[in-house]
Every structure is written in C-alpha cells, then in structure tokens.
Amino acid sequence: MPKYLIQATYTADGIKGVLREGGTGRRQAVERMTESLGGRVEQMYYAFGETDVYVIVDLPDNVSSAALGLRVSAAGGARTKTVVLLTPEEIDEATRQEVEYRAPGT
Image (cartoon, rainbow, N blue to C red; front, top):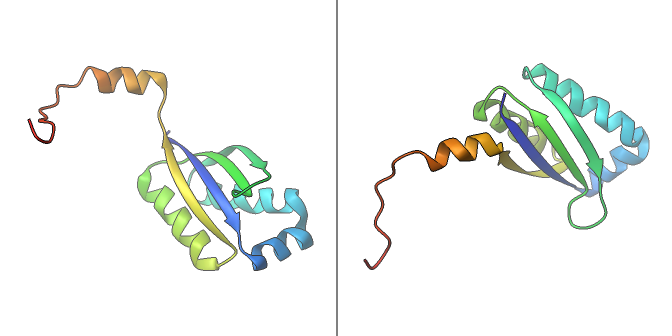
C-alpha cells in the first residue's frame, strides 16, 4: 500500500480543538479518518515550527490521499501538504525504466 507523509498546520480554530481534545484525541480522529479510507496511520508526531503535525499513513491510492486532504482542508481546522513516499525498491524500479527525454536547449 502506498505511503504518504501528511504535513498539517493548524488554523486558530484547529489549535482550539487540540486544546480541547488533546494530542491523543486528535490522533484518534486521524486514525478513524484514515481507516475509513481503507488505510492506517503508521506514525503521528507533533512538532515545533511551521508545521504542527507530521503523519505517515498507508492509503490504498492517490485518490484516497486526495480525498483525505480535501476533507481536512474543507473542515477549516488545518492546512495540509501531502508528499508521496517511495521505497528504495521503487526507486530501483524507476531507474530501470527507459525514458525518452531531451533537456531544454539541447
């Protein structure tokens, strides 16, 4: 199952929700949401800095990942950014693929 790194930054309303529910309450909500899409949460961390939360999830496909991001953003409590994670074996497979390409200006 593909892995995704979801980076979330809370809005003021989102932070109010964390203050009410705590970190474990939000983790449970994220786990329920991910499971409803047929996936699972591998890890979830809170952090200092520009990004408030990092979550590594397994999801069935990019469509499920997009659905998750859309739903979270529409709720208004957080802004998300999603990164598709690739295994070393997937990179090995990518390096073996024949690709026709011409660099700009050549």
